[in-house]
Length: 110
Image (tube, rainbow, N blue to C red; front, side, top):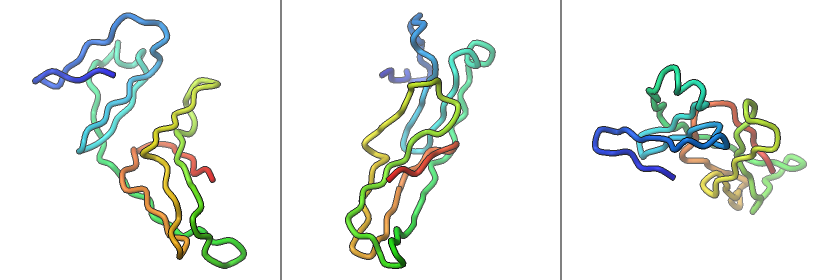
């Protein structure tokens, strides 16, 4: 993990295993392939989103069920992001909320 300097900049170490850069802060999130950063070294943050829903099973609320968001599409085979912040449980009424969701293609996994 890297932290930006006072000007919001950071320097990636030369490492061929680094395929993508993820950036997050309280105001937003962004991701970029390393190859794209070589052409344009600026990453534009997008504001966090929010997902709310109700899990129903057989037409009735499904309580205490775990859901997870995964990055979907675009990642190399075998790469899977599993951040604890993207796991929630449904409440007694089956309701769930992901309060901070990055922009992009995501998959809801049960």
